[in-house]
Length: 154
Ligand SMILES: [Zn+2]
Image 1: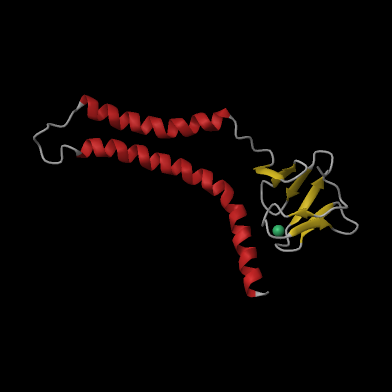
Image 2: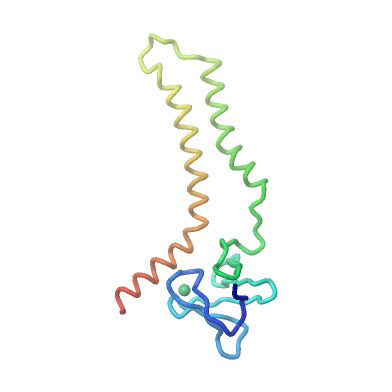
């Protein structure tokens, strides 16, 4: 266990390749690899990356950084509920339409409405997944950029 303090060196939470350490005469830490600057909060054991809005925050648990989150942005049950509704409501509407007006079994393309229900469900589910991935993509971008620089300017 090691507390977050301004005298030690820590792995960089943004690019995961470099090391962050305190900048001289400043209440901030910088990475030697991706050049990101972090605001240090020793009391709350947090690093805050100011280069994006809202700022990304990591918490130090004594051994490693805990999952980043956006400062002031809460991913509460309201978001989960909205995500479920976004998938469930359109699927229910399409499903209900097919239920009320069922296609005649002998007509061509009678399977299409059923496929359409699945398509509606999957496309909305993918949208939710994409939004979740987007949340982490920013960090992935820093990682890839730093990795590339290391390979090229070694
Ligand atoms: Zn870094």
